[in-house]
Each structure stands twice: as structure tokens, then as C-alpha cells.
Length: 428
Image (cartoon, rainbow, N blue to C red; front, side):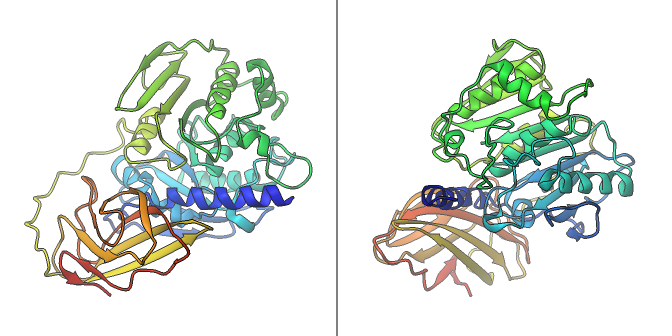
């Protein structure tokens, strides 16, 4: 890998850590994330973690959730909403982990870009087949999703294994084979920078060429991309649309266009319903920090997993907050570069009373200033700051955790805060 590629690779690692900040507390149930070994052919020694919710029925659906560069399966489990949605709708989730330097998946080698060719896709398919056999999952309801490197792998798996997956949802990815390389570098700057443009037919031929002779149905595809993405740049969004509409034999003219939320522009191709063959969501002003709150649920709806997946739990009464009476523990992890850093913060309620809101106060070291935050609001930007919960993560049961993250600049001082108080109580 040349020096430029290493630098860009380091930047993607830093930026994609933003996704790691999208943390909600793990689901409140007895089900746990479990590592599985010996699951089958695994040429690149991927790790496998599995989440099986309490009360899954017969022939449950199966979702593969693939992490970003620098991430892991457990990080994607705790940092996204797929596990809590699995609890609600009773589907099983596989979380693969890349093991090579940088923890990116192979989406570029010739082996990775063909059916049963080798490398990471073969290991992931072994995980799928292991779960299908052990848990008798429904083969007609097997899906894949991912962010960044995981989004690229989502495209790859749909191209390599159209006989396995029924649909995919790619958050900030690139088209199948856009990242293709032959020099072993596994990094394609032209694709990352949005400089690779092909005709729909050319893109479609790349997918069809991954599994010669396959003539069965093709998986449905949902793609997401932020207009301000500077890691895998926004032109890749339109190239993905070109590719998957061509694979399905569809026009690039949308069947419908709407705005389901402020800043979201959704186009559907080949249908106007929730399960259209191709769906694309453009996110105005959003960078590489997806999926954000509510996006995983939209992907689950696209898969059809929100229909008939089990009863919605009855809400329990919300206890009155008890500020200042609970013990707490804080973990604070930084990833720094020349003039900036990201911080991932986890608050654990070590007391005996449930919190229904939280405010974490701490002093940022001199020269540090917050530029953006997720899963919390932070004010002011520097000095003595307070991070407050947002609407969906204020409740923290005894022994449970809530997490948030932020991006900031620094002037050379990359030290951590020395103390934290939660609702007025000092934390360890």
C-alpha cells in the first residue's frame, strides 16, 4: 500500500469511528451476544458472534450485520439498534468480525468478488449456513446489512450469493466491484473519492459476472448515503442505484419520491411500497456517521421483518428520576489524529435506582472543542461541558449502560477529562 493510501486509510479509520458512537444500551433481556467457533470454512479467520433473542419462533428470519473499518462484531452489536429490533421482531443476528489490520473486510480482491471464490465472503456464508442448520431459520428470510466497509460487503454478498440473501441494506457503501484491485492493496482511491462512473449495464454486468450461470431471482437492495460523506463520497450513491436497478431490469426513473423524515429523500424503483425492489435514501448534510437513530428500523421495514415478528412489548410505567442519588462509572475512549479526535463515552448505572434522564458533566482539557455529537447534546463546546441524553436513551436501569460520542478539535493537548459527575453524583 503506498503512502497516500495509508494516509487515506488512516482517515477512513478515524472517521468511521463515528459510527461506533451510535451506541444504545444492549437489549434488556436474558439473551446475550455469544461467540461461535468452528462454524465451517473460514479462509481469512473471521470471528463470529451471534445474537439469538428470547422467544424466537420456528423458522426465524436471519440477519447478517457487518461492521465498519476499525470496528468489530461486538462493537456493531452494541453500537446499532439491530439487536433491540431483533428482540422486538424475533429474528437472529450474526455479527462477523474482520481480523486483518485495520479491521476492514475484503471487498476488493478477485477472490472476494466471485461466488465461492474465497476470502471473507466465504467465511460469512459459512456463518449463515451454520445458523440456518442449527436454528432451522427461514431461508426465504435471510438478509444482510452493514455500514461503510460493511456496506461494501453488503453489496458484495448480494452479488456473490443471490441464492442466499433476499435483500440487503447498505449504509454509506459503494457498488459491487467498485473497490476492485489486483495489487493486493485492498484500497481504491478512485472509487472512494466517487470518481468511478459506469453505465447501468456495465455495473449490472459486474454483478451478473460474479455468479456465472445463475438465473434465479435477485435480492432487493436498499442504499443510504449522506451528501456530506467525505470518506466514501456521495457520487457512489447514484452508482449503486444504477447498478441495482439494472440488475433488476428497472428504469432509473423512480416509481415514487418522498421525504419520510426531514432531510431524507427516498426514491423507490420498480414499486412504491415498503418492499420495492430498489430503495435509495439520500441524507442531506449527513457525513459518514450512519446508521443514525431510526435508520436501522427503516432497514428492518424494507426487509419486511417488522411484520408478524412477535408482539410489541407492553410499556412499563416510567419511574420518577432520582438525580444525584445513583452511583456511576464512566469509560472514555479517544481516537486522535493531528488536529482532532473522536471520543466514545459509556455511562454505567452502578446504583440501585433507575435513571430516566441523565446529564454528565466534565471539563474538557485546554485547547479541546466539540464540533459534533451523537446520542447526546453537549454544551458549551469547550471548558466545563455537560452532555445530556436525547429522547431515546435517557432511561438507564441499574447495571445497564448508555453511550454517546463526539468529535472535537485540539491544539496539541490530547489528554482526557480527569473527573465526571452524573446528575450531580461523582463517577468512577
